[in-house]
Image (cartoon, rainbow, N blue to C red; front, side, top):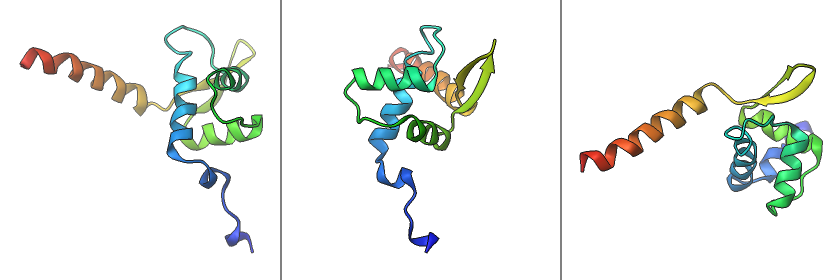
Amino acid sequence: RNAEKRRCSAMFDSFTLCALRSCVHYFFPRNEIATVETTIKFSERMEHPLLRRCTVRRLLAEIGFKHGNRSRNSLLIDRDDIPDWRSRYLRDVERYPAEG
């Protein structure tokens, strides 16, 4: 019977997961603390699908975000490989026009 249950993430497509990831990444360049609550508020403003707090928390964990504390405030921490990949990608984008 448990095998017949679908995981919650199976109901969400890759677009929703990517939109959720971009909501969290919106806060990093602004040096703002990304939390589940701020992510939900931002996604509501951007007209993304409405998600409950526990669903957002579960999806963020499946995407690869970790929860941490800083000065008694909770925050979201990105996986280590994603910022590395992003910096490599941006370096490549700058290099390609120079190569011609």
